[in-house]
Length: 174
Ligand SMILES: Nc1nc2c(ncn2[C@@H]2O[C@H](COP(=O)(O)OP(=O)(O)OP(=O)(O)O)[C@@H](O)[C@H]2O)c(=O)[nH]1
Ligand SMILES: [Mg+2]
Image (tube, rainbow, N blue to C red):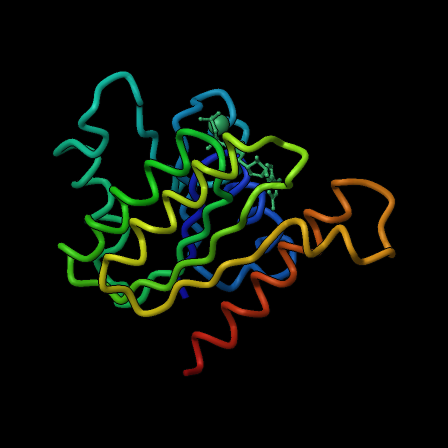
């Protein structure tokens, strides 16, 4: 399986999944070079966000090389931040151009993070719904707050990573 994590949260989820099972291909994508440098992996793609055309020829080539033997891609994005919410759309469009099967796993931010983040996330989902993809799985961070068995936000993030991985395994046998 090929799992791709986008942005700060998406890369964290991918790292959690890597700690449960190393048997997959993991590709980390971020616009934050410092964060990307700290990730122990050779499969990383840096997308600078200083111009509007996020995915240029160089980045497309990097994707092509890393994904050349992969038919299905499982893409993880924790929505709400600017980078992730925009980049996920551009990446999905590019994966479709490359004729890949695309399964998407996104999370909605916590309500306490503010209306702006929630709106950014929901806009992104509306765009994703317009693209022909294999599946769009939406997880709401706020649902996890209702579970009493946690001590910190980090505990919730671990629960979310578990849930996403369970769903990826389900989708990959369909
Ligand atoms: N599941 C999970 N969600 C996270 C984690 N860190 C942040 N988030 C959620 O993801 C949302 C987006 O955060 P990031 O992924 O850091 O955002 P980004 O796209 O990198 O944003 P910018 O760098 O500000 O453009 C946050 O509002 C949180 O709701 C994490 O470790 N795990
Ligand atoms: Mg970031």
